[in-house]
Length: 137
Image (cartoon, rainbow, N blue to C red):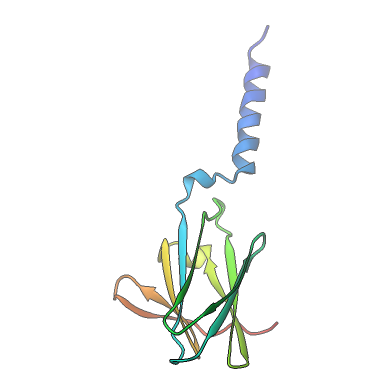
């Protein structure tokens, strides 16, 4: 019996398994912490989702935080977005974009401010990587 067809089937099976699991064992977990940095007495409602996961709504008092962890996809396209609501205002932001964030942090700390979210910069030890809110629905 020729062993090549068996080896080819074995190799093909491993390839399919690798792609199906998206090689998640090769990526480090990401840890996202979102802090309410609005005003004292202002509650922040945070509702985060990805294409496959809905993390639910969480109400944060001033300086409180919501944390979630996940393993980014091997192919570099993991995205989590969050709707932030307070005092009748509603904004949304891509809280984790793998292409943007994987080089900055594996533990990503965010302060939510009225003008937009700011990420903790591990080089300066400040929340100085700030973004505007996303526009559109």
